[in-house]
Image (tube, rainbow, N blue to C red; front, side):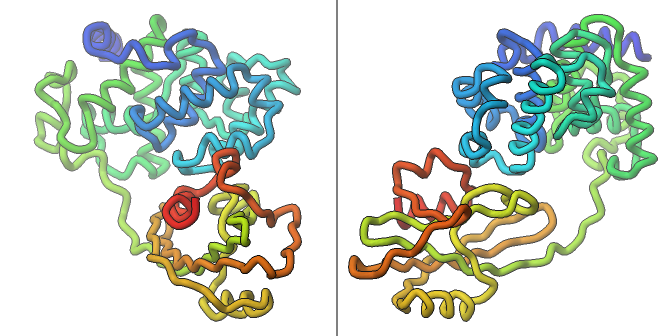
Length: 345
């Protein structure tokens, strides 16, 4: 079926695939790589404006490698999964220093670079260099599990290996850039997670899930777990000139390296901190809820405005005052940016 699969898919792609995505224009390894990292866990429609702004600021790999990581995180604000941005910056520096600014052509070497796994490495090789390389992103997993009626959560090693074997068997030896885009497009636009358009699918006659009426059941969902909940109290502290105090989070962990509001484990801890500052005049703001993949977060923001006669609070490397016009120049978690936009900027 491998030859027929590729031919049918490419024939469909020629007529119905996406041919004008920004990273398909002036295509090179750098642009493909940035798009692939952005597209991890994120849909194309969301990525496009981020990609265009990113390319305007960092048109070449060398521009990205030389930039402060804060500039990268600032442009990433809102895309989430910020480790992608930190790895992107680190990878640009590694490629510049160790590979003279040229991405390796083989998947094994690429997959060892920061933030690049086997599927992303294959996407770069196939789309930038038009060489045979099998990808296995979420779209491809969904297509293959349905066509071959493969049951079991794709995150299981045995299921994932089965899917990798199929992906490699089906990958053609020619038109690899088109084939890679085609199978991603099929999953994104036709073989969708919800309400798949089976009547428009070029593979409908070979789809075992369709024949067995299992399309809605595949891929098998990940076993559900009750997510723990975390409460955090945050302080929107401004001075008499309406500058806001922000602190830079540790580079490891949630929102690593981003600038955030000072946070506390309890209201009592925050009040004790305010007492040390010599103020108790705090105003509660509406809580903000945010969900991560492994827990749910509720932010309890409080606003405090320091009077003009209040003493200066010293800055440090990770604790600084920012004016409103500086906010777009630094990386901020989306919930924190939301609080700032609503109640400060």
